[in-house]
Length: 390
Picture 1 (cartoon, rainbow, N blue to C red):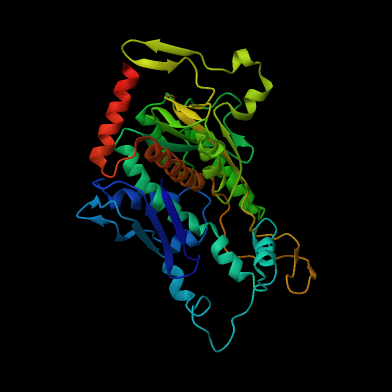
Picture 2 (spheres, rainbow, N blue to C red; picture 1 turned 30 degrees about the vertical axis):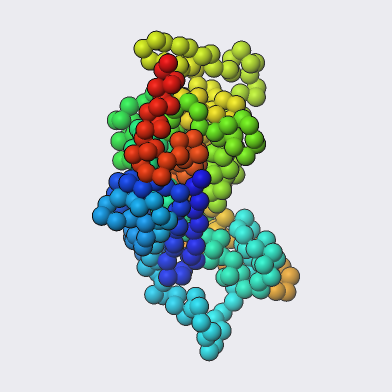
């Protein structure tokens, strides 16, 4: 139902995203999208690139006078660093070849990409495999959040841990029950963590990693509240909401693991301590007494907050590089090259996670409720919710 494509290279002129399938008449607030782009660039531990770029979204199509038209929406995010790379990334042939990158970095797409596509200059892999591409995803997710916001669905994220520093086991906040003040503290924190003392410990751990020329991974949690019963389906494997959410989150470049709800922890518990008991109230309707399922049962949203956690690997570009191999000669090299990089991207990855969850939920929302205009969709949603109450 919802299609989107991103294009562009890390040091090219800019990034493009095309979104198709959103209804006409949706109020469009570009400032909201720019705010998400700003949040993606924040977080303690980011590198020099964030000092160069000031990401904003330019609307090229699909929006007029502050509302969507129902046609494809095209956004462009300019790369300010392009002015320094115009020869190295020129689309036209150049007189003198630029210096090729041949040393592959462990943990990157350098080797696999070069072998797959037949490149002997790893620059031709780096530019698209770069996590710079996630800026376009955040812009796309920002548009989808406008749709979800119109129906009371809110999406947030926060950092649970950096390296070994984090909330104790079973000590993390229940994000399905926290208030607005909790999320305000998250946004004010340089680590996007509501606990001030834990934020400071995370910063100290990142500083330790930086002194050692190393990097830090971690875990973030993303939650969607206000999602009604009925998104997704058990009828086919690819329509299961759990699979769609997991795939969207796992597509984030640094993601190495995803769990929904109690996730891996539930594997060690008996079923009597895992499964959520349903409850019906004539005034409030259906609910569950707990939310170990993370808001999804049988591949379908169950009305509880959708909660997922993502494990983020340490950034593979190290100030003290690991051994390398030359992709042209196969020669082993004592150390690989070093390009400017972050020390920790977990807070920023959480913002990307919000965007990917928004894209997955918007797709399922369009599948469930349809409608060529926001007015038609709203009528469909209201009729469906009324049927649940009956």
